[in-house]
Image 1: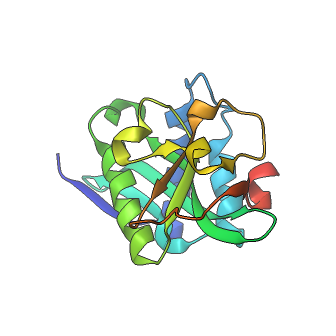
Image 2: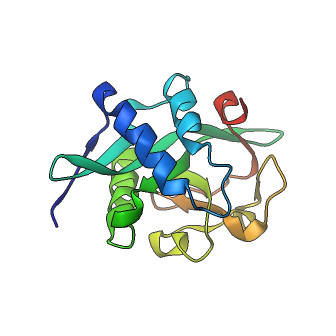
Length: 176
């Protein structure tokens, strides 16, 4: 199974919308509106074209990941970071390593673009294998009430989280 990873383009939008809808259709901890979030984020200032990535198998899009800008702010400083939301794989292709490839590739692209960290809300048993740790370890708080074990951060560079602490400030598109 040869998976090709590439930057999403405008022609992919309809396929990606349908893919995300199917990927989260039966997800218990979902509002089933992730596809609309991606559409809003594409139109926002937080969008980074290079960090909207698709996975293709035989010219069919089977996976997608999106990283967008966010900030971590405290009383004295503001730190640039990224939000991973969402990563999606068509149900019939889940469990085949496509999500892992998308995550690892997005980390490399983000690092190459100069970003130092990524924040996410996700399954506590899945993301630690990619280096994600609990946000509370770094005194990073989410702006809403969610279980601490689902709030995670990864440093993309050595010491990328040294001195970073504060409250996560998501772009307005996350709340529309």
